[in-house]
Image (cartoon, rainbow, N blue to C red; front, side, top):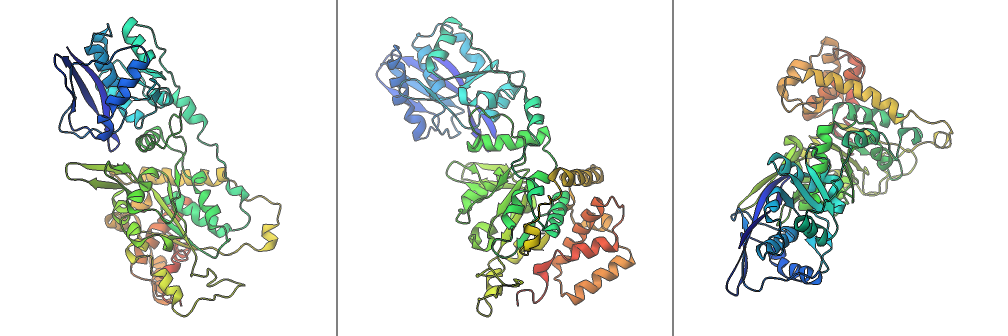
Length: 513
């Protein structure tokens, strides 16, 4: 007897419906075809144990299981549940066989029939609704995640018996209902950190405010203990809140990577990813035999923080260059090429030298001659070219550190950032793919960043006296435009250019000795 059930395979951040065809006939043969990997082939042993443990029988005749389309590689253990239900239907142990075609089912089976969680429940649910399925059956731990997709009945199950009884006797499973909008908007502004906790460092806060307002990448340079990491961790608290569309995009990526906690719904706050400097190329940008999103994709619509940037492997940093420009990463394999979104703000930090005390106001640098430049040279010029703000962080004086006065709150800074972003949204509304000043191309620079004579003269003097490199010119214009937006000025003024110039420390000739 031939029975069809339906599952789903996730490729990139999208899902493809897989038809599981189970044919039980006379003979003595068992085969799983349709490019299954080892985990799919091993499902036979898990299903055999789960079925027998719960009082059902495994067919001992000829069994052929085809996963269609047969030319797409199937991987993982989540096909256990639809294969098991197909076997029970084909061996006539489930009566309501016709109902199987209305549902997508996914779940890994334990030997006792318990259903284990899966990855990618959200993109699977989106595809199920798009293709007109009546419902989706997933493990209980993934039910709230999948239930964010409305107009689709989502059932959370913890044991195969619940699924068998549902198709055997029509026992009603209760669909999971999630008020996505309510949960999303109620949790957008609950942060563990706040800029009001930071003592002093007003110039660094200002630089991060500019970075947040224009979507600029930034690097913080300073001695150990100056507060670089503490300040970077607070950056998401001043970024504009996620829109529902951005939250859905971000949640899909985390769902595919298996990074969502149990019973999670939409990610409501911008992600902050901080990989260790020993991270591999594939872990940073994505990859693997079954391509998975890397840290730059997990930071999509949020912040990627690279602490101690020169300690990262040069190869890992270099593969970031193209994704930073294109805001997506393409992972190519022999038979498939997958795109993962990667629109993130890069915030990096570094010591100015190996000992950490070059240019320190009190402690002397103990590095030998040339060590500072050699340390800086670990970061390539093309990567630095993509970082708009170079900010020097100095230690906080004792009188500021011991002060009981709170600094400006993240909420106040965020309100100014949102106002600046609204100006940019209006400016770029006719341009596809550009949403903030950091994404401007050369044509926009000429049209939008027009300088008067005073600004031009100031910039010319700075370029000559500070020996700024040519690559600093465009960056100064972009940052100047953002500073003007924060001041709600239609034109760039000399004070905006002057402030932008000071954020190009690493471009100054002789900075590293």
